[in-house]
View 1 (cartoon, rainbow, N blue to C red):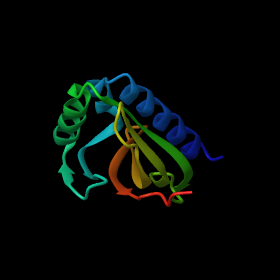
View 2: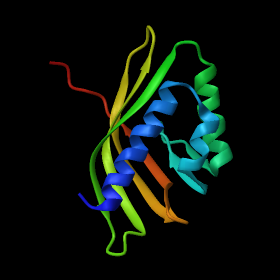
View 3: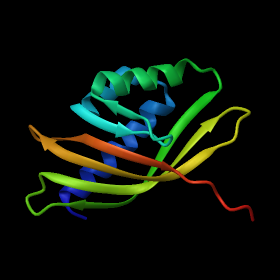
Length: 129
């Protein structure tokens, strides 16, 4: 694994832990100030304040458990200044159906630290077994 891949995978694990702990404010260092996020329902969030407000809203819902993102690949550019992460995600609520799908995250290195520049989440329904 490249240093970029190792760092991004570690940062993704940390964001998963912070979301599971419902600690929205502690997500700020992982997000670029000008982040763009397209949620699984197609809604667009622009800027870190918008993304953090969405997390805070979810965390106030007593049935919300977590979002778990599982990295499948990280592909850095030649200079290791940007990278594309792909994977799957699962959203869990108590007493409600689980949502799942695929995601793409764009990371960029800012003053030596990887931050999320943009994310696209796609909700996919699973075929019954």
